[in-house]
Image 1 (tube, rainbow, N blue to C red):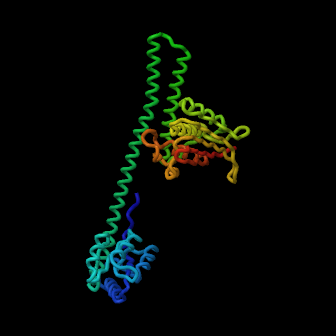
Image 2 (tube, rainbow, N blue to C red):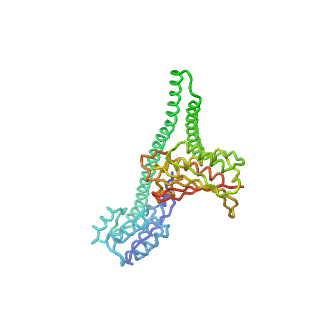
Image 3 (cartoon, rainbow, N blue to C red):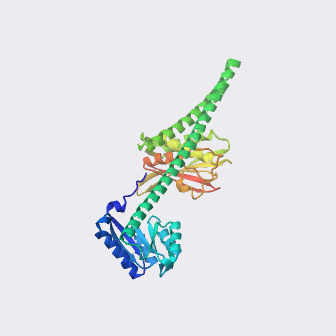
Length: 395
């Protein structure tokens, strides 16, 4: 959480910008600030005064920075009335403004305070004590307001993070419970069949055990994703077990595993590479990345369709690359969401409640790919499908 900046008063120097076109009023303000430095009873931070005589010049000076407080006349040659304050405040919303009021526009000065000015002073009546106090109080009051706003934003962000965490934990609990329920159902079915018939058809037993294995593999993958995210959150890099890995066979195995989970989709693997496509990789984690991408392609293609994995080889100044592109015909991703889909817990705005997910799969995939020295990217159009492309160093 960012800390509050040091007050210019505590630093011993307050830089004041006076926006005033009346030379006599400028001299009065300058003399009053000079008297502050000469009066021992007004000891404190020194004042450094700069002056401009137009609103535009004041706005330009504020944009340049290093101004702690503004003394502003509302009647200037290029601006008049409350709009003068509004325009200046929009230029530098974090800089406190003290309005200078003539007797005929004191009502306007009060309105400016209601709009956010820290104080107002009547011209010709602001002696050294009044002026120095007004400036100091304006600086500290504005700092206190900004600090309250910062704390409110931090609290809102923390509450949003907690809500996101709770929603994610609920989704994870549901997703882990689903394969557990399936395993339990298959086990209970086998128990009843054995109790009733005393023996089972070996083919049926193998088929049921295959389902149990599929669900346990799914659970293990989700748990591994969570463990990887926990390591990354703790600031620890993943421990990669690098070995020579042949990617075409790995992708074909992953596609076959995911194909067994769906009857609505046709998963195809296309390779434009002559011979093997290999790299020094952590085969277990890369296979998990591909399974995550394929599972997402199936999940976000609720109407079915074709999911295609295209493997190719590329070379550039950085060396040789194995390129794996997973393309679906699903709901796609809105353009404003595409830059964020690899962020933890982020889910696209068009997903809705009908498609469950944790927002961890792609975040984990990105971390794994990047730690291999690779890249992952997304291209998508709503209603037209999505292509996720992984580039990994190849031999």
